[in-house]
Image 1 (cartoon, rainbow, N blue to C red):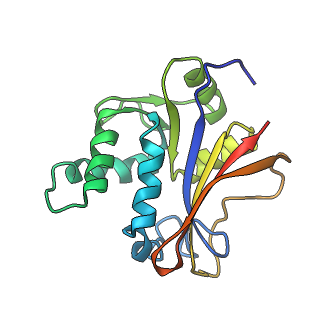
Image 2 (cartoon, rainbow, N blue to C red):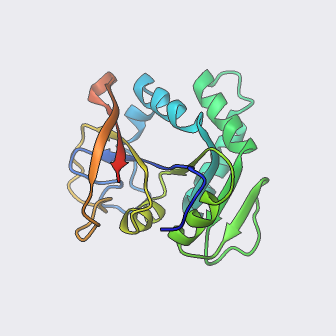
Length: 199
């Protein structure tokens, strides 16, 4: 691993109790998330992550979803204040989107990188700034876990079995130890877990 400025790579993902980040219907099978995404524990969890971050790192599909939805929330007076604050941060922060198909960014303050996730992160870590936050982009998180580039692993675990679908943690990940940095339980049995990589 290359020397870096101390910037942490923080990944965030929602998981079912049976370890899935999407249901058996594929990446868009996320109906199980909705009852929990607007709970106080989930909103406070996300707020705690983005406040220390100055870069959002996303895969193309997730970027299209996030950046197609969140910018309008920033000015929505009826939205929860925490949602408006996150939306404003996302619009204003540096965004790096990993894509092999996009050639130019359709969003402001965004650049496209056609390179492996670990290589992109190594480059970002050599620059000054706050945390590099990977927002629910499973392919990016998996690649960074496989390359042992994740410093903080943040999870929202929701009490649902979906019975199938893709898993975040596959066999063959590098062995390593993690320490619990934070946890909280919320409405409907949602649990926030944050682990730091012990190196």
